[in-house]
Each structure stands twice: as structure tokens, then as C-alpha cells.
Image 1 (cartoon, helix red, strand yellow):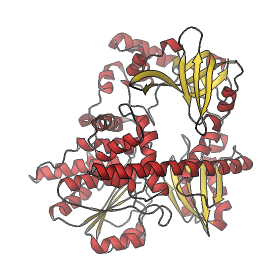
Image 2 (cartoon, helix red, strand yellow):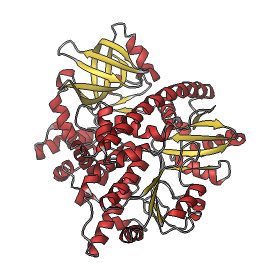
Image 3 (cartoon, one colour):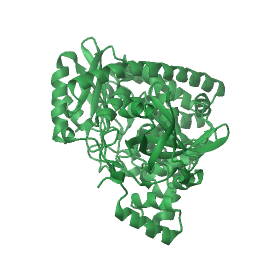
Image 4 (cartoon, helix red, strand yellow):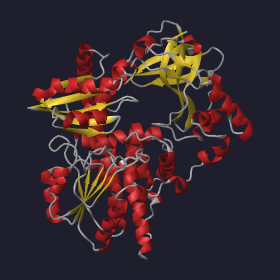
Length: 580
């Protein structure tokens, strides 16, 4: 049965109210723990029993962090790294060009710098070299280095790793593995096919951090001390975990929670400069990591110099940090302009092809490879289906895909590549990349669509919108949000509660930027509530609410604290609306 009678909202969704059993569990927990009702609702939804509530609200990293040796090859990887440190060997770090790759590289660079070693950073150019190790780069690095550590890449790089003749190679990754592994010292990856998958929620930076934990243990066993302070590195792990959309469950919760505290101390020059150029005026949150800092770190790899993000995160020089942060901010603005142009063309093409297919896709001449992943996300959101966007250049196209919950896009792309319809491809369930020959474009997309249809992608309709309860504007206070945040951090795999606000009138509506909508809503009884709807004009929400004509609506969204000029106020992150 729908909530507030909303069978079809402005975005085509049915609203579903809070589960009766969860509501009952929350009431019982409130009686047993004396915790605020809003906190109990979150805990009950997560399946946390009352006797574990205290531990969940104060997660301890030492209790939640798994033994690094649960991952295959971990001991060998740490031992080889330690051997290089002891022997003052020449070390190179080969990193992916996104936030996870940059953070992973920075973890190693910072750690090595603190023990008096300078490593070589190599980040491939997205356009000229593509994702992951390549033969030329690995061969060149091997001539001048004893050890190459590949972070956030390398699991499928059999040929390039073989080309690193003369150097040892260690891979620290989290992308889906193939049936065989490259021939090297170690491949540490919780998503290897011979792993049980229980630690598959870690991003690459999490894997690197676990390697440093194992390294610390081996140093202690050899009476070498404990090395640099690992807790001080958690700001980098938190940034990567949130920006790479890793689920905020189990150890990731504790890593991010502690990492946010480390970041708030403003000790890392790169993150301080990035926060300042992003105009952050409050304590860091998962929102800041995912939507302010992450996109700027990514901008270098997308349309600028690929190593800018890693260099920013690793530098100890405030002046250098400010210069790189300013450049990344400029690149992020350029990226948005390029993205908007490609998005408009891709959406028009995808709509003409049909948004109800198992796979929604678009391909265009000269579309920048640095924005196709973001545009794929926009198509996925518009259609509620897996989406792929490809930029064509010469005889090839390079593309990126994003999936929806329950549909494994990475596995389907890997299979299509194994069948010879793609030049290469890989990734994980929710995100993947590919390279395709121009003359194989249509057959490859057709085959991918078939594989995704077998997973049920063709049967997907607008997803139901699940709500945690109903509030009136006067009940949405800063104190309530602070109580809710005790159960955080919130993000992928751990969504913040979503509330319905019934029968409100639009007091003020204004378009902000390219596609956002700023609103002031009133129930006629209180001072009302302000709302922001990002991407509103990419959906039916924007124009209908802008042209409200005095109509009343039910609204739904998540609550957040908006800080402006040193003052705090409540703001709703609007997600949907329905005519009352």
C-alpha cells in the first residue's frame, strides 16, 4: 500500500511507508536504550539489535578492522614492500587516475616519505594510455626501479606486468578478477575469484591501508619499530571510500568515521587547500567528500594532468597544495561544461533509442573520455537501467558504464570482452569501463543488452521510494539531525533516513545553476523549511515545481544542516514530490 496515497509521484515512483516490523523494533529499542526515537529508527532499519546499539554508535576500528592476512597474498605483498624499504630500493607506484587511485598512491607516498624514501609516481593519461598498466610504461619503469606497486589497477594486466622485466610487481586492487592472475609477487584483491568475497566492500585505498597494517606487524616482529602513524592516514582512506561509492558497512563505517575526524584537524596540506578552494565552511561530512572534494580530485584524471590528484594528496608543501588545488578547481569547472554538452547529446540519443531497454546507451564522435562515466550515471538515473556512454575516436570507442542495484554490469562487460566483441573491459558490479572497435559497437551493445536482460534489467520499472516516516517542517530541527547523525556516517549501502513532508505549499522557487532548484516550503503553521533539489531539471520535478501555480505537494527527501555565515539551519535534500 502506498504512503500518503502516492502511487505515481512526479518522478513516476510509488511511495512506500516505513515497515511495520521495523517501526515496532524501533519502539522497543527506544524503551530499552533510552536513545532518541530518530536514532532507534535508523538502527532498527539496519537490523541492529538493542544490545548492540551502543557498539554500533561508537564503532571501534580495532574491533572492526579484519586481519589483513584474510586476503590472499597479503603477507607476500607486505614482505616484499618491507624488503624494498630495508634495502632502500627504488620503488614506483603505478596508480589509477581517479580518487581511489590517487588516495591509494598518496597513502604509499606519504608513508614512504616519513621513513625517508621518495617513490616515483606514475599515473597513466586517460586518453593516450587508458586505464591500468600498459606495456610501454611498465617496461620503462622496470628499467629504473626494483619494485612497482600497482594500486587500484593491475588485476587483469597480464601482458603489461610481464613487460616489467627486471622489476618485481605487487598489485593492490579491488576490481573484479579474471580466471587467472598476472605472474607477479602478489595480487592482493578481495574480489579475486578465489576469495570468498566477504571483504569485497573495501575500495583500493582500504586494501592499501590493510597492507600497511600488515607491514606494521612485520616491522614489529623484526624489532624495527612500528613505522609512521597509520591513524593519521585515515583521511585519505575516508576520501577514497566515499568517492568510490564503497558501501559504508562494517570496517568501512569505522574507517570513514575516524577519517572525518582526522580531516577535521586540517593537518594534510592538500586536503586543507582543496577544502578551502571548495568553499567548505563546516566540518567535513560524507557529502563534502563525495560532492565537493572527490570531483575536484577526479578532475585532473578526467580532463587535465592525470597525476594532479595524487600529487595534491601526497604533498607536504602548503604552497604547492594551494597551486594544485586551484588548478583542479579550474579543471572541475571545465569538466562541468564539457559534461553538460555531452549529457544533452547522450540523453537525446538514448531517448530516441528507448529508455526501457535492458541497457541504455549512447555513443558520440569526440565525446571526452573523462566525462562519459558521469554522463552514464545521469542516464542510469533518468532510465533506472544500466547505462553506457562511449566516446568515439578513429577506429575505437572508449566508454564507461554505471549499473543499478541487483545488476552486475562488470561481469557482463568482462564476458562480452572474453567473447571478443570488446577490445577490453572490466570493473565491478556498479561501474565498469570498456574499449570497443567502431565496427563492433552495435553487436557489442546488443550482446551486453542480452546479458543484462538475463539478469532482469529489462523488467525494471521506476523503483519504489522507501520512506522512514513523516515529519512536519516544525519538527525538522538541527537537534533532530544531530541525533540522526549519531548513527552515521551515511552513504552508499547506508542511506540516511528519508522523510515525507505532507501537504506543503511552494512559497519560493528559483532555478540555481544549470539544473538545480532552490525552494522554500510552508505548511502555514511554522516558519517552513528550505529545500534544494540537485538535478531537478533533468527530471519532471524541476519545471513542475517552478511552475507550481499555487498547488500543494507532498515532498520527500533527506535532512541536512546548512551552515551559512556561521549560522546553522535545516535544509531538505529534495528527492521527489507528488501533488497533494
